[in-house]
Length: 180
Image 1: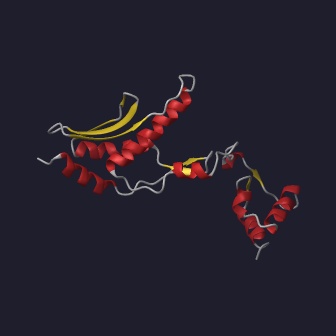
Image 2: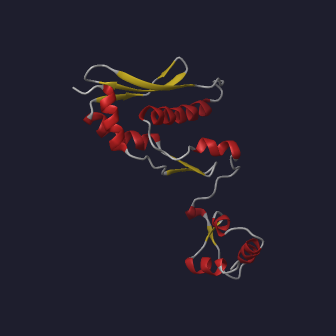
Image 3: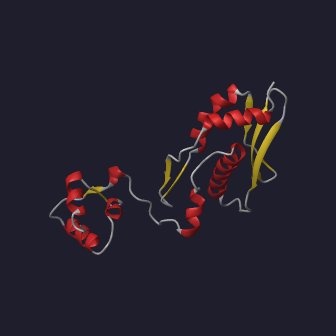
């Protein structure tokens, strides 16, 4: 019978690198979704006869793996910050972050640098970028087209313009010629 360390070693080798496939528009960063990760983990947890729990106990968010064969366990935890009950959204957000971070730590998941580091340097945007469906098309011979050309000439990037407009391939190629 394998002990919990052997099971964790094999589980870690099967997980591989966790990709950050969700976008935080307020910080222009990416993160991995805790629910998607748990969904991916469930078959591996079953395979290795491990139980994952993420309780909140004594003001700490805990990620805990329990070996169902012998009861051994490993855990990672983070203490919740002191907030008032008038801020339940902040508490919920913090719990979600801490579930993600404690699970990442517990399983030694390979991930890119977390979006938390970016938030220290870049304050949140007041208005998140619009989804592509909501963006207007940038068309030739419009005031917006003229403004886009001026911005590019002054050193702005096409990526910055694409945060505000949808641009066809042909129009994008035309705009990219400006700074060549």
